[in-house]
Length: 249
Ligand code: 1GP
Image (cartoon, rainbow, N blue to C red; front, side, top):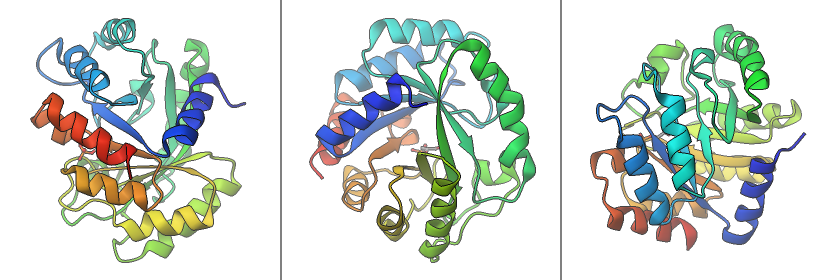
């Protein structure tokens, strides 16, 4: 069943065409960084806050998420690296399956462990295919997931994975270059996936400029994610520039 957050995102995409999501790292050193950066991002045009990373050693995350939700109107969505990262308090979770990989742990095992937690905590799940695309250097997600990314020059491979995911009932797809990637997902992967499916396309990894984000929104991505760039330079002006470039693509 499609939940309230997913419906809200679909409605916002209908109005704005593309949305800007800021990814917050739960493991930043400062305890109030999540709240500060999240609130600043939403004040300056971010439509969604994702929270997640490859590791999660933050035992206060639930309280921080509650504080963040009390302050911002945008949905706060968990983007987990595995089942152990499911904690209560989020508006929704991207319930991901690493479809580009052939590692059963990320195709079914983490989902079996995490699914019951998601249900027990009453978190809305957004079924999301996760496709890792080669971005030059090996990334943390490639290492941790022990999977081979789709070659950057093979957009058709991404497209066929997207078609399979859609037929399996997933509604969103995350085209990922990996956090801090040298090269973001090439636009051809987005454009071909857009042409072949009705999936809601999220893309992120290595987006360092508003222009890069704009090109990917133009290619058909409906949710554009930046993490590292805003983390390195938490400037209101930069957030506004990204939001403008994405909303006016
Ligand atoms: C990582 O796609 C996200 O999962 C964001 O990547 O940190 O490179 O913006 P960056």
